[in-house]
Amino acid sequence: MKKIVVIDSKDKNSGSTSDFKFSLSTSINDVKKIRLVSCSIPNTSYNVRTGVNDQISITELTGTLTFSATINPGSYSISDLLLEIADCLTAQSALTGNTWIYTLTINSTLVQNNKVVISAGGVNSFTLNFGTGVNQINKLIGFSSVDLLTDTSHTSDLVANCLYPRIIYLDIDEFPSNTYTKNSSHTFSLICNGVSSNGEYIEFNENTQFNQICFDSSISKTINNISVKLRDENERILDLNGNDWILILQLN
Image 1 (tube, one colour):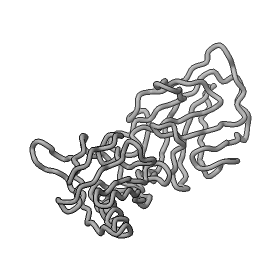
Image 2 (tube, rainbow, N blue to C red; image 1 turned 180 degrees about the vertical axis):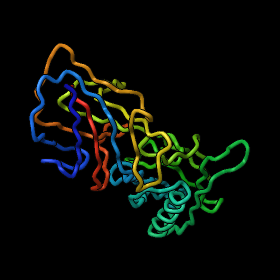
Image 3 (tube, rainbow, N blue to C red; image 1 turned 45 degrees about the vertical axis):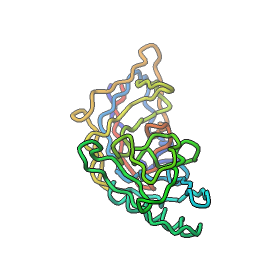
């Protein structure tokens, strides 16, 4: 017999909103199949996160001064992020005594369309330490994870993309994996197509995602608890900044 289970993270027995245990009011016996009916997840994750990608490391040629500027955590558009990075670099340079004025702009020429240009007045030479620096912000602004040679400006090799998360992995410990990636496996994968504005909800259902069913036909289970985790594309627990979400499953 099919059973519908509605899981609201605010009703969790333990854990955080993205990593919790939910206890059923009544056990469900002889479960062999799980189907994701729908879920609604608030788009409240930051694309700049403390200890993950909140640093930009630079060496200024004058005085050979190396420093790392810390970007405030938050959910940024590309234009707001470029302004924030420029302000943080300029402020950090002032502390070193060089007082360089940094700018980050979008290059709109046909050759470098929508790529990011980092400059310090157009005459001051500096290196970007995206290879050796830790927790660097380079991927959001289109730079690869390599150190760049000294120059008066640097242009990203890729187009800037602030979308986060691109995909959400929904793991339920009590059920086998249905999605396989290069280094891991997950119960369900949720592609974030057309992500709504920050603070709004990302909706997943059978009309927006393929019908995901996880089978274990050889073993029947009795389900008393459901342990749920939300992970991002880098296998980190997805931080919703304390906001709750709802998941609907069908068990039979």
